[in-house]
Image (cartoon, rainbow, N blue to C red; front, side, top):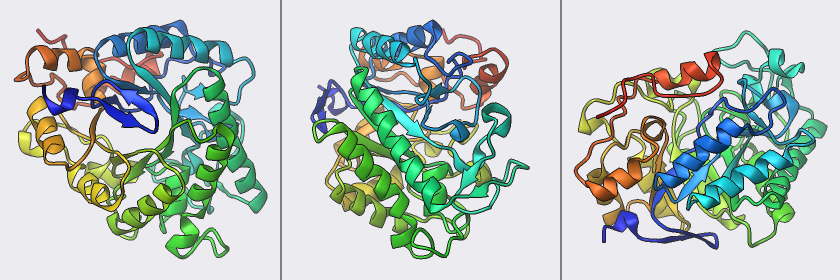
Length: 366
């Protein structure tokens, strides 16, 4: 049997293979941020498609932390029924379910939230005209508590674990990066100070959910911009996360301001362009003892097998390919030579804004 279809223990949760559906904003929640029947059906299809673990599209922990419409809101009263339905559907489809917890910081939309965005410092996002409010110590404490409360709610609703979104220039990443963290208190300056917020979030979440509930993270192996968060810093942060009880690390890279080196690189037409985060993931794998997953541009089973066979990483995270082919993992089991049909055009996100749900805009593959 191929190593990619072998089991993996992730913080006490047994995965049937090494494939993870990486967190992807689906845009399918209702106006209150509650799980919709469409999202339940979408995730059930993904679970039935063969991936061992599904990570939800980013779920917001506080009102001002929202960026896009249709996002899941874990702070809204009455969200529990939909969360339970989502976890149940994924379990019935044969997969495990984690929720990705996020606060987007300076990428927050006051139009959606009715609140000004907040961030480590009054430094706006490259793609926004809104300048955030610099967080006070009280703001920081409240957001840390919000992450813990959201994780506790997910556990109570039947989820198998949670993932902290520490990548792509959102709030945790903004604290880590010198470009967006200009603070002169204990949360800014040195890397030790810049990682303090993340470590406090992890500690609070761990205390809220207990030792038997996996807490993982999506972490940038570098922001891919001069003067920003680097791979060397990521290695130090990863070691500290392991000491704090992190169960696994999914390695990504880039932010929305990184241009062609952002998280969702376009037009990956050549095999040489695949697995563009593998080198960083390999470095983090050498630095920690917890499972490490790589996301980004993986389109063939052979590249997945090669990375796992060498011990470079422990698992493969897939995002855009599963938007076009939710059953891709099952396809690979049937035909190991098959190449994912995703062409990395990034058109799948436009319907999320216009139609209330992501979908592939290309012709269905044969």
